[in-house]
Length: 264
Image (cartoon, rainbow, N blue to C red):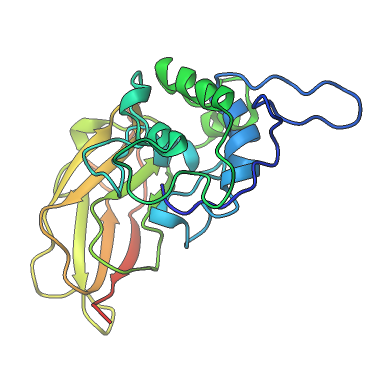
């Protein structure tokens, strides 16, 4: 996490979401939907959204769980942003608390720290395993009704990066069949200036499911990427293409491109 501006609006002095009129505010609870609605959306999304989100961490409702849980931090690659069951080992908590050893500023950037009561709710959610939104929520119901598809990717399509990415995060709508993650279903090609694939070999990738988040695939290039353009191809068509644990296939090939820029 890095440079997320916000002024704490949305929470009272006790870390509870502000209500309207004379009605008492609803309690902030240790479930993901409550944290999304009362912390990430009103406070963090002001900076952590869209293609320019710091460290590629988008915290809007469509991306936050996929890009947090089980995903290595770009600032401290030895730590996960959220490590299920381990709040003290989760970089999100360290950034919110301004702990020693973090890179950059405490979050939210340029604003008062969140009340400890709010951080304790986030801690409890992580202690509980950092589950996604409950089945009864609108977000969960929407995900359950969709076909197997790519839900989010970081870096975004057509992103321009200032340096080689530590990894690529691909979130799917359903839990992924890990046995289908291999060099034929996941390929990172070097793209020539005219947009065609280069004759140079593709960049080798290692692939694994995110810890505690089996709908997310973490891809790590086996070498630093030189300046240039790259195309990530996820094969879904044909036998042996990517599929979920219920054998529902991706059906079509999916690709996304990004550019690594050289030093100015």
